[in-house]
Length: 172
Image 1: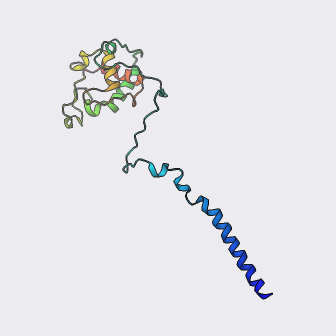
Image 2 (image 1 turned 60 degrees about the vertical axis):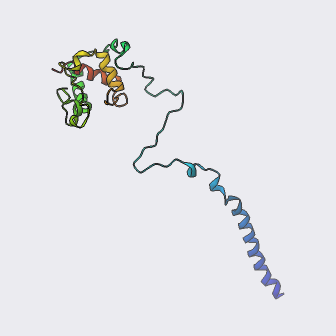
């Protein structure tokens, strides 16, 4: 009788161990089923991954059909924004934020960071390139960038870019 009582707890423990092993065994390799965490490309600290949009996708702000600078299509563009005192004030504010660091407050290309660039930023005042380019071409240059100038299509809306072009026409 005594041996039966000792075997019963051992049998219970062995049965429990067998059930536990059978329950855990199928899940032992599950971390390898979804390899996304293992096969991701590595990025350095403070580095943004390049996320390309899917092919054929349309941006949330619509497709931008602004022609490239220097083309006849760009020269034919016209400012559809009505020029008012408020719009010129807004254009001046945007010019101060996005253009003044390189082109300077007068647009002569003498901004605080201009001397670090080779070639130096263009003179976009009325006496410089600003007078030689039609407003559509200036809009295309703001949109796409040119000669080291970055594109501003993602920073400024089309309306804001036209406001900056309108303000450029007032520079002396």
